[in-house]
View 1 (tube, rainbow, N blue to C red):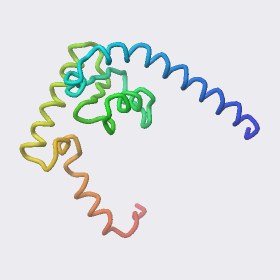
View 2: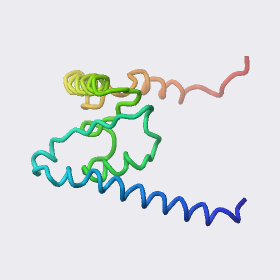
View 3: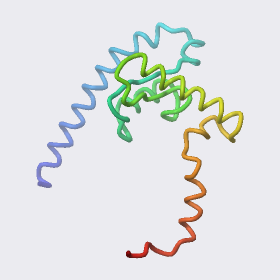
Length: 133
């Protein structure tokens, strides 16, 4: 199996390059047709059947193009949205959560995190180990 690894890696790199070329050909003409001000305030809503895998090419490319860290205030993934209306509902909820995060939280993305996450992390640090039933 290890003997095949270089061939698999070469094919993977080739596939990534070809897909990136397709993305660039489809997206960049529109991107560069926008003014700098339009590009700076653009919010991209990417529809898909499920959440993008960590490190997904489309997520990395869009973040790179837009100069953002990843999904956040300007790059939103609408997983499970089957049509434009559902995607717009995801975007509306996301934008409302950002405003709530600014108003009541410490950061625009505060309400996109599970509010129980940080307290749970603190509690887990104090636990010994899982106990068998």
